[in-house]
Image (cartoon, rainbow, N blue to C red; front, side, top):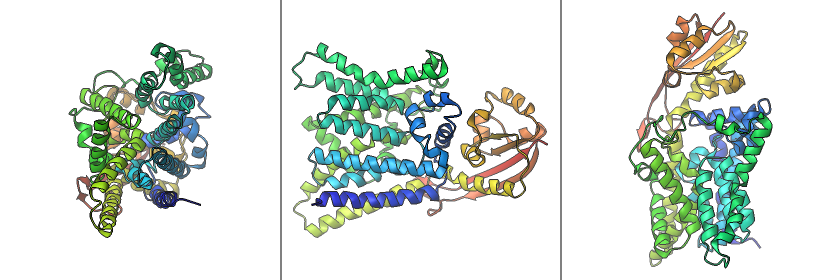
Amino acid sequence: MESPARRAAEIWLGAFIGLAGILVFLYPDGYQQDGGNHFLFARWAWIHPELLVGVWSRPAFTLLYSLPAQFGYPAAKLFTVGLCAVTAWQTWRLAEHLGLARSALAVPLLVLQPSFLLLCSDTLTEPLFALIFVTALRLHHAGRVVSGMLVASLMILARPEGFVLGVVWGAWILLVPRDPRPAWRRIPSVLLLASGAAAWWLAAWLISGDPLYIKHHWPPDWTATGAPYGSGPIWGYAARLPEIAGRLLQVPLVVGLAVLLARRRGGTLTSPVLAVLMIHSALWSFGGLGSAGYARYMVTVAPAMALIALTGWNVIADRCARLPRGVRIASAGAVLAASAVFAAMYVDGWIYSRDARLIAETHADFMKSPRPVKRLVWSQAYMAILFDADPWSAPTWGDRAKNLEIIAGLPSGTLVFWDDETGPSWFHLTRADFQGAGFELIISRGQALEGRFVKGRVLGFGGTRRQEMHLLYRP
C-alpha cells in the first residue's frame, strides 16, 4: 500500500512537472546566453565531435542532451524538466532514507528555490549536476560507497564544481570513523573519484588526437585573477540567499544548517553546500576562474539545501506543536504558497529572457520575404537556434579592431542578426558598424519588454527591458 508521504511527494512532483512544462513555452529561450549556447553545442555535437569533450561545452551535458537536441530547443528544455523531476524524486527518497520527518516537503523545498525553478526549463548544466550529485549521495548513504564514488566522479564532466565536491567526497572516505582501515589503505579507493576525469581525458585524446586537448582548449577567461565578469564582496552569495533559497524558505535553511552544525550531524549535506558556497564566494570576491557571481551556481547542491531546509522546517514545526493543528497547517500552506509566488515572480522578472519574443518576431518578419543566406552572424544564441545555424560558423571574435576587420571581410549573402545590448557589450559592435561595412538594414524592431505577468519592478526583480533587434544583409 502506498504511504501517505509517497502520495504527497507524487502530488508535489506532478504540480511541479505541470508548472515547469508551462514555463518551457512561456519563456522559449534561456535566462542567459549560456543556455542557448549549450543547446547549440549539443545539437551539433555529432557533426563536431570535439564538442563532446570540450571544457566549456561540458562533456556530460553535451553527450546526454545530444539526442533530445535533435528534436529542437523545446524538446531539450522539456528534457531538463524531466531531469529536474527525477532530481526532486531522488531528493525525497534520500529524505526518507535519512528518516527526516515530513519527507514529502523535500520536493517543494527543492523546486521552490527560485534559482532552481528558473533553471528547470532551461538548458544549463546545473540541473544535470544536481541530479548526478543527489544520485551519488543516495548510493553513498545506501552503503554502496564504491558505486557512489563512481557516480560522483561524473560531476566534473558536468561542471567545475565537480572538482570541489570530489575533494569533499574523498575526505568523507578517508576520515570516516567506522572504517577500521588506516587512512593510507583507503587512498586507492578514493582514486575512483578521478575516474570520470580520466575517462574525459582519454575520450578527448581519442577524438582530437591531442593528449593535452583539455589544456590546449582551456577557456581563456578562466584565469586565477583578472575578474573578466567583475567581482563583489565576500558576502555576496550570502546576500543572495533570497534568490538561492527563497525569501521565506531561507529561514528554515539557515535554521537547519545551524542545527546540523551544532549537533555535528548531516555532514554529507552541510559540507557540499558550504564548500560550494565558500569557493564561489571567494572566486567572486577575487575575480578568479571567470566567476560571474551567479546565484544559479548553488543549484548544483540544491538537493542538499532542500534537505537542510527540511531539517530546519521540522525544528520550527516542532517548536510550534502546541498551536492548534488548523493554524499550523494554514501557516505552512501560506509559507509554501507565498514561496511559490515569489519563485514564479523571480522567473518572470528575469528581463533578459524577454528578448526571445522580439527575436522571434524579427525572425518571422524575415521569413515572410526571405533572402538566400550563405552565412549567419548573430549576437544572441536564440537567433542562431531559430535559423538552426552551426555554432562553429560564428566568427572568432576578439577586440573591436579585429571585429571590424572580420565584418568587413564577410562574403555576400551574409545575414547579420544583431541586437542593441548583447552585441555592443559582448562583441563591441553596433548596427551602425555593420552598415558602415556595407550591410543593408532590412528589418529593425524595437520594443519595451515587460514580464508576462508582472509589470514594472517588484521585490527587487523585473522592470522594463528596452531592446532593439536588427537584420542586416550583404547583397
